Image (tube, helix red, strand yellow):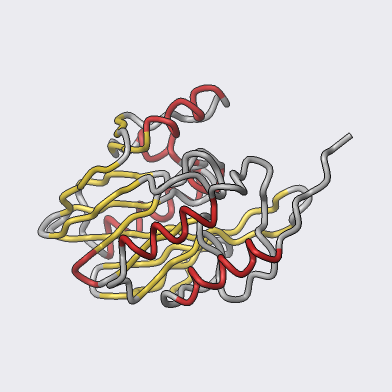
Length: 229
């Protein structure tokens, strides 16, 4: 991995496909690393999730311009949490376009967060240079609005926070989780993308399709949290 700052690294997973990982101190969770993706082709890039904040997003976009010769950027937050769109205002200031599920735009607006400029209902395809990126809402899970992204030319599935890393021992932040739907959603993703060779979770190391099975195991063993009195 290449260190761009103490709180930001990039790592090439496949030609023109980079994992970006940023760190922030989150109350109750400590120092948390969050993943996103840069998919580049022909001077264009899609950025799945911004880093945690504007300063780290500026650092990432500077690197994209200098190292990847990116001139046109589309940012795609995969749900409406800070580890997905915390730097969206900075991306917009730099002329990036942005795209998210309609429900994510609504949630961002309601929460007073930066709002992605364009929306889609459930499934859309984005051209990035000569590449195709498929964006899909497969159902509720980590949140009611989590999407996944599929990059067919390298068999990469970006699962975001819907998918847990192999080292995860619990489901993480479940404050807005749709626990009843989550296992069904994971199985749907497995059915839709049987060709996935590389799976990138929202936090932790990338792996293969075993991450989807591991997420199902965690969901099975997760007892329902007691109602907060």
